[in-house]
Length: 252
Image (cartoon, rainbow, N blue to C red; front, side):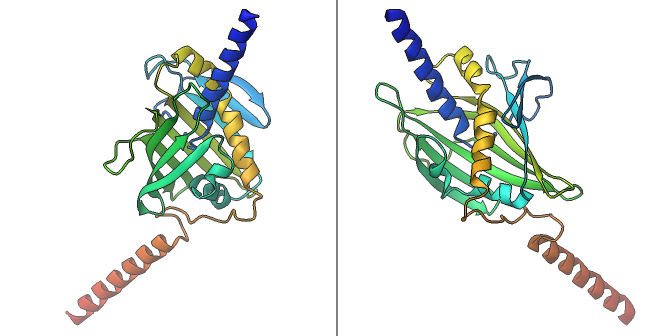
């Protein structure tokens, strides 16, 4: 009986770690390249880094493809208002700062069961685009911010994370997500690593479930994208400057 109770306690703890790791959308160790394939499950391919670049914590990566345009997938990633509808135990999702549509700071808090300290995060998200390929990268990382509220229990650490959205020729979108996160507190690294293997599958399929929601729209592309408002403004400004230079040369 005691052995069974201990086993159930470990399972409950593992579930809680999974919640914390899957809740941030949020993604990746940029320098990680030494990955090995772990499994393919529910349309998601999962990899793990075999190098400990962050102490005893591994980095994990998941890859999947959605039958949806890139801007719709990006909408889900950037939609803070509906995040609590699909992120387990998320009870506070507050925007602390917004510098632009693609540069923001969020505060998120998660309610854990009795005897477990609640966790919260403060992190910055920045989305950029490669104009030549149309690939969008959303980089997310924990930061300190003067307007962040006091912690509700333990301030967890999103060490490094990123989502890479690649537009495919058939109109679908490939999403590659990498993450290394530390729930902090007394949770051991070996248990965090073992549970994070399921993080890509749960998170990427949770995103999939949001794509058909009525409120999910098309998010604007980051500055520099071909056809974006910012790119059009830049092109118009360049044309005006070129025209002015031509007129000045003609006057001479």
